[in-house]
Image 1 (cartoon, rainbow, N blue to C red):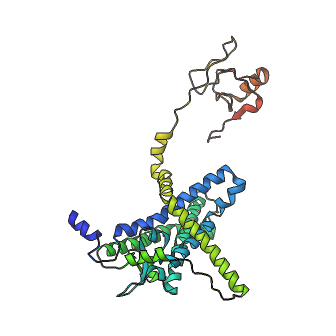
Image 2 (tube, one colour):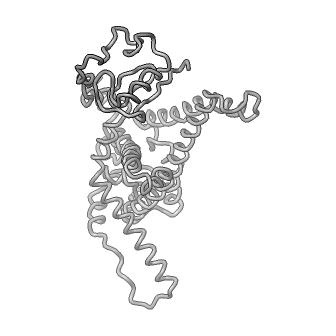
Image 3 (cartoon, helix red, strand yellow):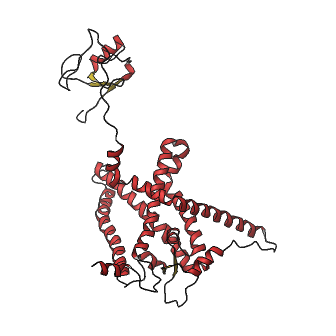
Length: 356
């Protein structure tokens, strides 16, 4: 069985196709970058909402713009997306090409723009659709819309159909990957097939060409103002994309670690490792004759020794009393009846149960 599995997942001698592990790994790389960046932006927005709040609110659109610059840079320079280039892969047009074009030659214009749009738009639209479904489910759960609303009937039908549509989408990708493993397909992803390209490994000639590729020298001829502006914009966008690619190349493993660390499956382990022990109750500081003692029953007020009415806690100590009892006591003594901590009326916090 092990030999059969190795035969299915390893490439044949002389075959330029990447293995299924390489193909899936490069897909998961970009899928891990966005959640890690999202968490980073969330931390910044929580620390300074005024400065970074816009990044959090418009994260999807900002990420799409940066992703567009990044993928455009790599498709034009290496005939591959960022993650594909990271795993030493490139895209070539589908077909029986006896001689593969170099990675530096770029893709034909049609395949280039189809690849770029599928790389950017499909994840963006899928993410927006998942957010829409999540918000509609919350509205349906809390009955925000009236039951007779035609809109409610429409989105309930949409919510009922979405799991089947999503299952068909994921099943399409799974079948394509199985066909790729068995050698029945040239693409491991339907998106590559729609773009009219397939993945191959970089050759030694590709690597040498990428290393020798230098920025095109500026022409000595006189250019019009429009041409100079276009050239400056192109250089600026190329510089931004290069900075993004360099930064991501350095931080990609750190981002994957953040994605793993903050994943929902890992939260229980993190809590068990980082959770602090429950703090002990406050030390009884007031040893006077009139100090209240804690009752054995948790529902009894320490002052009146009856079941609490209108439960109120003291933020200075955490103990709970009847509102009237603790209000009068604090107003008179300016301290907690149990601990003797200095307390004012503003430290009274009323507690509300779900029943109330």
